[in-house]
Length: 72
Image 1 (cartoon, rainbow, N blue to C red):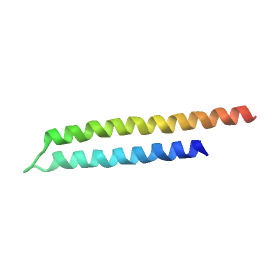
Image 2: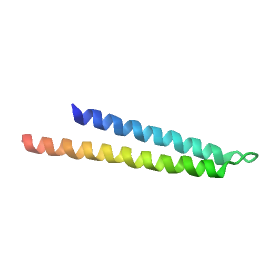
Image 3: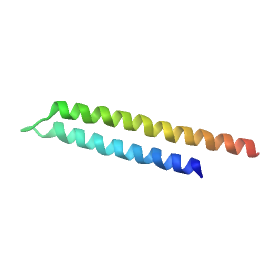
Image 4: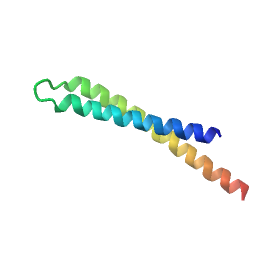
């Protein structure tokens, strides 16, 4: 049960990171009002969230494989 919660939290973090990447690209793509510094900060936060989310998904998958191996 805890593995599913961890994996769901990981996927939510990945989705939040993708939203922040889209927001950061939106900051840069406006030619009249390009906010480069803000886009950099948002992209840095997105990288952190993406890394944390992928880590949670990876740990959950490894734990599920180990648990299946112990049962058999």
